[in-house]
Length: 511
Image (cartoon, rainbow, N blue to C red):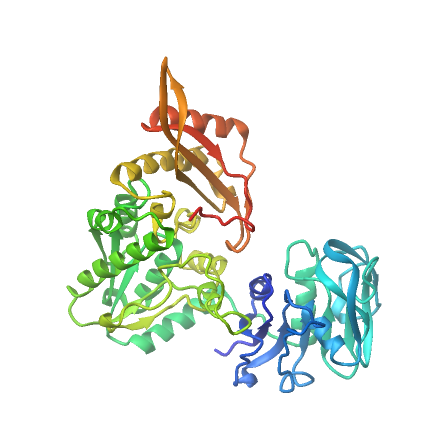
């Protein structure tokens, strides 16, 4: 079945992925492409959205998309930078704002009888994020909405199906943002809303069967949501020809290896568990640098996985749980390399010597969509609700070098924290939680004795996709009990701190 598609041109905004997700929440398929790498198969797209950007249209480094094949030929919605670009280079005027327009604002004027604003009333809250502003509309521009501070908050271009807004409809702070997108995509551009989890499952299973045929596929399971849903989809498509390998790298949560294997047994998956804890600890011996630790863990995983894959006769495909953010984050909006905050060892190619073809059933969807697909496949809510856990596991939550004793200590701390969140009914209110073992010893007193032991940091964040995150205001009573339990029950720890940093500027993990 062919779905109507929306093309999103990315100018480097931190919100571009949010635009794609909001569109998909309307059951419409969307794709993100860098503004300077516009796809050639434009007939496949029924509408175009131009994203925001940290750049200024007035600057020397203004980003210039080639819009001749799109503008006037397809319905277009220009957001923030896109709106300013259309104004600045089409007879309008963009100038610096007197005050930086950032944060919540309210629509003070909406032009009547406009389908674009149907169902949206004056006073509706919107989110601004720009330092330039449109002083004069482009040629044939018609004002559609204003806020108190921003006269040209929204406009359309007469004679075209082109709409432009200086606010961000994709962020939650824009109360009617989703409705605005729906008005544009469904009522103005006429797209069908038929992109659903059920349709994704049917089409993906069919595509896997066509691609893989009767070949054997090997998949590395991590216990996380992505690899599990990838396995369930593949199992539905090819059954016993799927061989799953679950490697214990010695850096999993306490009892995780045994618990997850048991869970997989009940799902009818063909899984082999491999305990390679010692091999990973040996590979990590004496390494303190975070990137070197990641690489050592990644390399050890590849070696173990390769050994096991070779034991399966005639395997030709490798399945991976790659999801859409992994794909788009590897291509920056400006065509250059994205800044490497940290490397993800589950993304990127395997070494040439493995010579396996790749199948990635989740490559087109976001994390929240993976969960919805899992629910439609009947996967248990407990598994779908699991917090994300980094590929290198506790290896990047132990700051400094890694030893078996440090792993034991952190596993015990983490278990008290995570089990506590579950017992207090807080686990599902948190997007991700974990503990960090710090390379710091601090003075304490236990009984009448002075101690000089480790400090651990607890971290719990709220997020929708991990791109941005806020620390969670956990109840003091819970933190108090958790701290007491950790210090009393985990040998070697005498101090607990709680991390109250948001992302940005901090990251979720400490390494």
